[in-house]
Structures are given as C-alpha cells and as structure tokens.
Amino acid sequence: MKIAIVCYPTFGGSGVVATELGIALAERGHEVHFVTYKQPVRLGLLGNNIHFHEVHVPEYPLFHYQPYELALSSKLVDTIRLYGIELLHVHYAIPHAYAGYMAKKMLQEEGIFIPMITTLHGTDITLVGKHPFYKPAVNFSINKSDVVTSVSEGLKQSTLEIFDIEKEIEVIPNFIDSSKYQPNYADCQRSLMANEDERIITHISNFRKVKNIPDVIHVFYRVQQEIPAKLIMVGEGPEKEYAEQLCDDLDIKDKVVFLGNSNEIDRILCFSDLFLLPSKSESFGLAALEAMINRVPVISSNTGGIPEVNKDGVSGYLADVGDVAEMAEKALYILSDNVVLEQFKENAHEVASKFDILNILPLYEEVYEKAYKSRFKNTF
Ligand code: GMT
Image 1 (cartoon, rainbow, N blue to C red):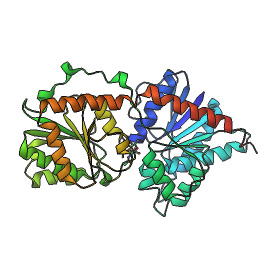
Image 2 (cartoon, helix red, strand yellow):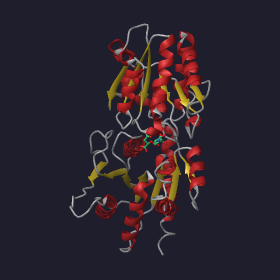
Image 3 (cartoon, helix red, strand yellow):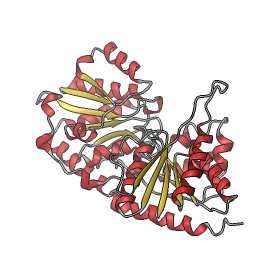
Image 4 (cartoon, protein in one colour):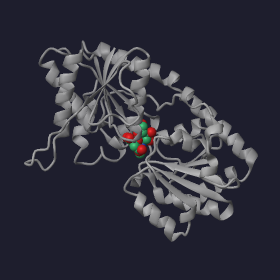
C-alpha cells in the first residue's frame, strides 16, 4: 500500500511513534511517504520504500502567523496526486487532521478518494485540543476521519468525555521494536556517569509543565538523602531552566546531570536503575515503555494511560499525581536491595515485551484495510 504519514518531526512521542511505524511499514513492503516540515529525528536513511516531502511555509510579512495548515494540505494534495498515495495517516489531531481533511476534500473534487486515519496521541486532546479556541475544529476533524485510533484506553475515554465524538475509536497502544533492544552491557560506560555505589535515576521528556518536572527533582531529593544516587535529566523544554534552579536551591547540583536532547536514549537507559515519570497527565508514556524494554523499572503517576503500561508492583510503582513522598518511598524500596532491583528490571522488560511491534503493527494494518475499504462509501 502507498501510505502518506503526517507527524511532528521532533523528539515528542507522537513523532517517534509515527516514524517508527513508517519504518516498520516500509520494512513490510509498504511505500511510505512522510510529509512534514523537517525530516523526522528518528528517521535515518531514506530509500528502501521511505520518502520524505518537506512542507515549506514561505514567510510573508503581512501575516502575523504563517499558515502551516494551508501549506500542509497543499503539499498533501500534490504528494498524493504525484505518487498515487492510497491512504493518509495523520498523527496528532492538531492541525494534522484538519489539514488532512482539507486535502481529502480538494482531491475529492478531482475524483480522487483518499481515506484518512487519525491517531490521537494525548495533548492534542487533553491539553491543547480541548481549549475553546481549537475545540470545534478538533471535534470536526476527528469526526471527519475515516478511522480514529487512540494510543490507550485512558485517552479514548478522555476523548469521549471531552468531545462529541460520533466515530468509533480504536485503541492501538504505543509499541517498541524489542529486537533493537538487546542488552549490551559491555558498551554501557556506566562509570562515566556515577560511582559504583551510586544508583542512577533517569528522566526523559520535553520538559513541559505537563511532565511535572519539579516532582522529578523532589523525588530524587528524597532518595539521595537515603542512598547514594545520581539523576540524569534528558531533554529540552520550557521547564528546564527552572529545574536547574531548583537543583541549585536544594543543593544537589553536583548529583544531577542535564544532558539535553539525545539520540542515544538506549545508551543512557542501559546504565539507568530507575525511571521517573510523575506527569500530571499522560496518555501512554512511550518514554516509560522505552525505559522498561531496557530493563529499567518505572515510578510514575497513575494518570491517563500510564497504568496500562507500568504495572503497579510489577514493572515499578504508581502513585497519585503530586505524591512525591509515596514515589520516593517506592523508589527507595526498589533501589535499596540488589535482589529486588534485579527482579523489577526483569519484570519491566517482560511487561514491555508485550508491546512489541510484531504484536501492534498488524493492528494498524487492519485499520488501514478497513479505511481503504471505506473509500467507496465516501464516493458520493
Ligand atoms: O508528551 C510528550 O512527550 C509528547 C507527546 C507528543 O504528542 O509528541 O506525547 C504524547 O504522545 C505519545 C505517543 O503516543 C505518548 O506516549 C505520550 O504519553 C503523550 N503525551 C502526553 O499525553 C502528555
């Protein structure tokens, strides 16, 4: 099948899922065309069934805001026409579902019928999408999609609560290619990060408010009071400066390393003992899944779709949003005993393996089939 994928090309989870999905589809023989404003960060070499089409938005001084949606829908029309694309899969409703629908309607005028799948990822619903400034357009474009998928049951429920959805929402969880995550401890270079007696705690995110960054620091603060430990903070975003200041105020600056964005997530997770994800809201928590497949247990909040990934008492622990005392207590329980830690590491890997791409990709292929068949219904 010839598939166009629209996504954000940045380090965010939705872009990562879209890219990894595209790569896997290409490996299965589909022809995949990424349409976005920059080559996705996780996309390596093009070729082998993978194409990239850059959306340019020319600066025009009259415009206070440059119209990206317009440029995207025009690029989609051109790409779909030129390459005979059979299916459009947009990741993150805003503004992709809206732009995708416009492209679909424009093509329909020419007798080209392109089914559109919209995958809801999280903040496009729970944070940005529900804002009154966007809500009607998001609601409209979800209902106009031929198939709608959500990355967790939790997100599906939130979508149904927040919006007036007429469409069936199919849950297809985030996934991981476990064949790419074989442990290679020889290459770990743990000693570069911590002394032998120190535990390494890691957090990876885009440092937005929703990630509850101060709670990461406060949990770590409590842990390092009891056992030797280092905190590795990976990512960039608006809360990073405040986080650095907080470490300074708490006098733990020498125990916290801020690495910025990294393409070496597996290497970092390879020497991590525990992953913290205390988000205020989280539709799935792909970062937690990536930690778990790398044998890193997770202490997280019990919000949104996280409980569908991090199994309480098995792959880590869950606590109420903001309950740093409980999170620190559970972190100490896992980290204070080598045998307990080893058990949680094994469990984390086992739970994560259930989300292997081999189990999830066929679910996407099924909805593609369904959407492709639906194009006849939309002919008139
Ligand atoms: O929150 C992020 O890190 C970015 C955001 C995105 O859209 O790129 O992630 C969302 O989508 C991911 C992939 O489906 C999910 O695993 C994340 O849980 C979700 N983030 C939130 O819901 C806050």
